Image 1 (cartoon, rainbow, N blue to C red):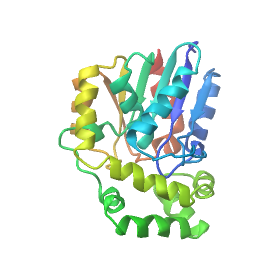
Image 2: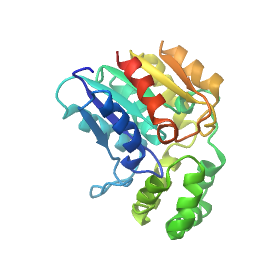
Image 3: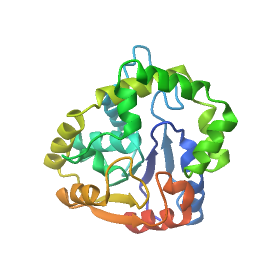
Length: 251
């Protein structure tokens, strides 16, 4: 156990409930200084005038991290990983260590997945997020528990899906349309954040493949850890394995 604060940032469409099983495993291993940060619109209220851009989320996270005393071990998932990588591009000094999945977002070859391209499209994006808001709870739970969340976690997430989250989804993905992520990638490599870990979930194909994520890791001298037999919600599917992975990284 280290004295640093472990900080976790989730993505879309999610709440901090996705970390609950992993947090329980870390607590078993003696970690007590754990902070779960909730991005505005994704389980937390949005400030007045919130535009939902990448820069706004990056600056929000910098402000949250700056308010934490002592050293920080930062972990990001999905768009939480995107926010973390954006922060490291601007302030590589702000954390002791960092770990994210979805590092392929920053690769020069990255193309947004089909759902993201749908959200980025005028009119179609509005229809898609409206459908998610209107989706019956049980249908949502069935769908997302089938993708790797537990039913309890999926139910918590669905309880926070509303029109404001829908607005933030569209704003964020549209702001991140290429070549925006390529530009962040170049800044990230130039910043050379130290003590990194790129998490490669074997069955997660939303943000690059093993090659692109490994190349992003290598570009800044970060380690990689491959999790076999799990997808996008690896922290729900194999929380004990994930806890061991992070404990090793932090040590």
